[in-house]
Length: 438
Image (cartoon, rainbow, N blue to C red; front, side, top):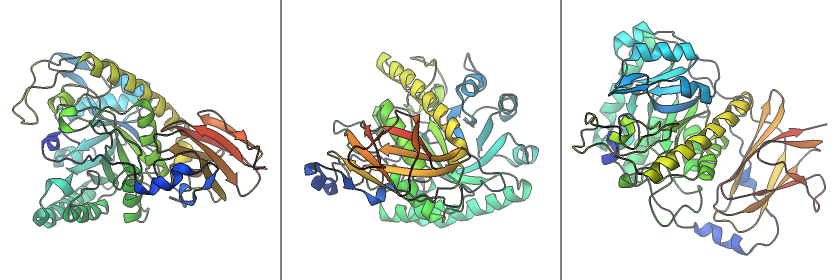
């Protein structure tokens, strides 16, 4: 779901998954069990740069607005103050004034479908982070049209590289499609841009709920596949679900689910996070309620940008309250990501450790971890992918002097396994710990 949200009426990419059968044997376990796949090894040589841009970990918000639109004044200042360093600007506004405000605030800009004049005017401009040339091509185009669409992208990408070699050129795709022909196209598109980028929105409008993020097309698997497809040679930026659209099959994530989706993406190889989406008339035109510091119920009579033939969505009081609460949780995540960003763009640590878990889980490997060699030492990221409370044990291969909490409470020394550390992980909980070695 990107751009002006036109794909909402065309593509369904959300599926509800029942508890995986692989989870059933773990329901009866009473002690710790080893989970070798919990330890991720992505980006052993550091995070790849976005084209010629130095390694960076963008933390962005989608559909940002600047200036006056339909009687309301919008500013990028609240976004910069909240800690975002990147904004995707809605394509329906004028670039120059919005770019000037972004430059003044130190924000970087993602811009869709740039004209030749825009590219030439801003070639090498450090305020531009990248040019986006296509949206959801693996699901919007029929299989027989993929070759022509790929050729169009490559031709335009080459033109932009010649005019502006300083900025990456890429597409934003959907999560992995179900249809085999579209899934093949999706894998092809993963390798086309200077940045690999897709969204994955797993929280569906269904009474089944979400037992685990570990599903066949869930965030851990789609991100890992995207990184593997490029051999880890280019960045991968994940668009994270921070919205509700019941008419199109999506529900609000809980604050814990938002945390877990973000951490699951980072742990499996995401080198940038963009939250979708900033609430405004743009999202409401696509029947979406987004997050924001001051959402309103009705943005008034606005043009039918998505050509749906229906008026813009009016949000109820519950949606508004949820969007505001999730905005607060997003800002906590932004603060944590900014604090951790020096470690997130560093190489994955060559330090041996194992992860064991205890408790009933809905997936075979409910806890995933990534250990980074940050400038201030080792930083361990951990996430509980399941909607169950678990106990996790960190079993280091070499002695640790201490484990300091960065996000969440600190672990405790294990009473049963000397030299190990244990912690309780609530459903969808995230942790970040700094490990001190002798």
